[in-house]
Image (cartoon, rainbow, N blue to C red):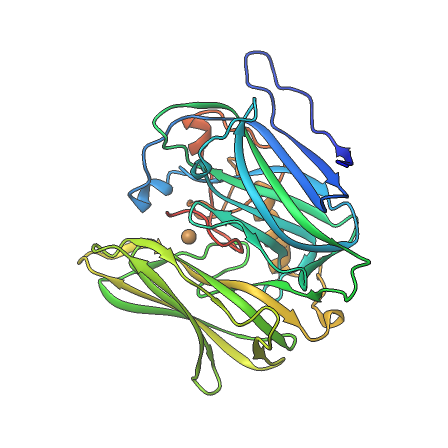
Length: 379
Ligand SMILES: [Cu+2]
């Protein structure tokens, strides 16, 4: 039986002559163990392909905050499917969604003083589903927010587009209970609430960031994010210099990024052990075959799944922490003209977003900040 409960319906339609204001609908399907989030309608004008990173500096792929909602029940989140459809349910090319991220305002990121980025998806990211033996622990009432960046380069304007996000969950009564598996994000150049892009000089170069693990646990799997000319992202033990993991880029003959690999350490197995109060280093490797420095052209981060030994030791949100406050502000102003952050796509939050046209898409939007999603602007 298809038991579906409508939990929330969005706002009323927009002003006369404008497309209706996008709304978010959340349907909890208890028999299929799914939460289906439908956001739309969106109007997506055709845009030129994003060959030049500088184009992004004009906000061609900035993030739009979608209405926030509350997670419906205690459970474990274990994956998602993402589809783009039109008003009649017919498929729309998935790649018009440049990237999407989900922010959990009720919990902190492990390494950064900012709200958790639960999941992300981009044009080069496949749907992710993990085995039922693991999952992200979720509580009823956790405040979630979605941010999307569009890039319609299909050659024609698209109207009446909906994003349908199906989130899979595991019920509280599953026996044995899933292992708590948390998103982990390690960026080589992140300023919380600011940007994470950096210059890439000609030839080989590296950018590194050192951090101390707040809790012990096991890394179950990692993916990476790079821009053009990226080679790899690696994780090292900063105290011994040993390379613990690396994800490598596939590049074309001109050094442009095709994709970044993933590494699984065994979702059911031991994983890669990381120790509390131990220092680690995440390193982004680039090789720029041109003789021109790519200004702010690069990003490098590793994101993955981390199983803490003791979830109760997870760092709590400090609502007065300056980084935390800055991150909240950057999330609130994303997609508005008040965004103080560096131009270039990022993630955001705030009110319901409306994509109107090239002008709206460009008005000083974007802003690079903490990118916890698998992906975002640049590809
Ligand atoms: Cu990027």
